Image (cartoon, rainbow, N blue to C red):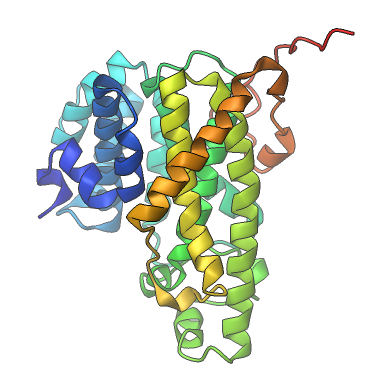
Length: 318
């Protein structure tokens, strides 16, 4: 069944295993809004991938309607508009998300370098972090850069997990400078021979991806203290569970040809327990400023550079 025919709750349960688990720790109202946002983003992604009839054309139409401010004509946008208005989602962020998804429409996607990877990850996932700030009623502007980073960390995990699946769709999100500009077809061939130089080159690139993801996860965690308490716990759990996907890949010695990695229910429970350790960051003295170097590649994108008004933290008394 197409995701378009599913309710937001059904779409989240069917496609977002980690997020569906974390949603259990949100209140009913916020959980419902989170599911609605996820379902909309999932639908846009399906349109971009051509999994829905006339999907790419519909996605361009939604983009044009948001840019012009005209009334929506697409059913997906019509259904999303009440949440967009209620939560005051910045249209620039939604448009950046759509822009990233439309970049996947090229006949072949081969990102040349790390800067390109960072900008792509921002568009398709960092934007979702920004939108979630609104869903979670987070009013502290200092949270935004960390929300971007948590989204980027998750997207880097996605890319590490889906190397072969993406190659079969003629896509290579691993920076070309890490893999000698290998084509998707060459990656597919390399997957058949784990002892080949090309296979090992991709294997080392996956290791780099997950190491980079760790840096962004760490920054994302630092922003949790700006969220309301219940949201802090839920997003911490979502991040832990998603990060665990990468840890499962590490345990295979970065065997990237194995396909999807999943996190068992017992490990989700363990991740949930460990996630509570981040509550210590709610102590003001433990809060730290965002490392702006992480966004060096993101200049010009919404809420980058301007997303934080750095407020001095209280100093420890003598």
